[in-house]
Length: 181
Ligand SMILES: [Zn+2]
Ligand SMILES: [Zn+2]
Image (cartoon, rainbow, N blue to C red):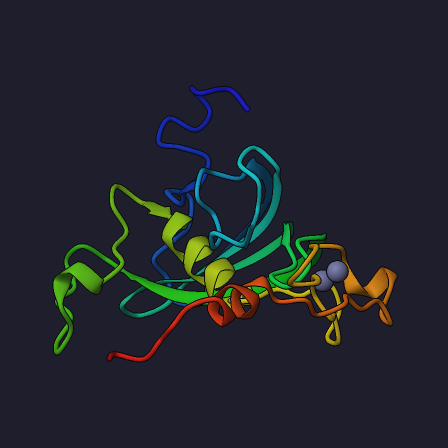
């Protein structure tokens, strides 16, 4: 995608051909590269990976109702055993972008999405829907037993594995006189 075709970034849609007549609709599919930080620290969409977007914009009374569908693969690691985990995401969000001449009652202007020069920027919508859908603590499988706290091997590979409990801390204490007199 050349920079001149999308001067304001890959998440910006030019809707100047969309009539303001309520019910007019345009739909566009595009593939973009995932931006930095699309996800959570433990799981997310690697920067540069493909993000498949379908954006449908429909003129309504107050502005343009934008429906964004996102398909992408999130990758991360299991919080218990640190094995890689992946999740195919297929998400949809819908937001109203108001015409600039519309006042919006009862909402903080910073929270209001606006059409600017007949364009909408859907990056924040994509970020919100992706981040909300991701698990806060991804696991490779629901019953992942994690790692052995003593030697660090994955317990799934050797569930019966045990260590002889020889705790040197108690042995050391036995040699001390703990009385105060
Ligand atoms: Zn695991
Ligand atoms: Zn062990």
